[in-house]
Length: 340
Ligand code: GLN
Image (tube, rainbow, N blue to C red; front, side, top):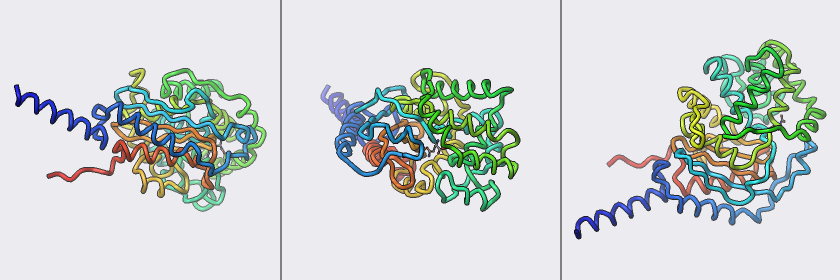
């Protein structure tokens, strides 16, 4: 009796330690997750750094105080803190899921062989980066590669392509997503630079046909509304081998998940991707709407929304909150324990 009692105690202590330091989703305790979310929320709530994107006029009007955190484990548990009801436009986070769609339809070589999978070291809408390698050696996380990826989604009409893209994002989020029409109209009226990027990628042969349609669909995909829980579920689907852990639907072939995560790791935070990976080890993707998603493979997906951005275009609070939470939960996939 006594022996059994101590075994139970040891198991409970081990479970607690694993819950704090992290090992796999099943071992993360809800208490540890909630504590990590609460701590990061409180720590950065008053932070006043950064500024909303304003080159898309509608984004300048979004409440800069909006601050929501969500974490979804690979066993389908959802944890939230702060403002998780409010939606922002997904912006560049969409690039991950359109690239995933192209890989699903055409295989990984379609992406590496067309726009490439290397970091540009330049801002996300750099034209210099295109010129440097004639649109190759690019990646699908920056605008030229992303517009080219959108142009590669198969479909007989704009409508068919668009419906496929929106349905695909919705499968990742586990609910039917919609477009923020105000943001779409605002960006469509001011996206002359992206139109130039699309045409340049066409000139270099990375877009085969109709670059203006590709830029227009890309602009619409960036305008899809999401809340923190949607984004965390999308990230958790990647963390869970392409199967949405909440709905159970296999959205992306698990064989392709490593390809998607690799490009996120290389270029998800643009020219600050190295900095980010050095600190967190997490494949991630930011958007100028203020969202960031990050994936701890096999463990959880996390998302934070907070509109003020740093100079590279990444949400200031989101970077800090995700880094803290992942550290508290042992989310870094490179941080392994020594085999004894
Ligand atoms: N729609 C935005 C653009 O093309 C997306 C940029 C971003 O989120 N970094 O400029």
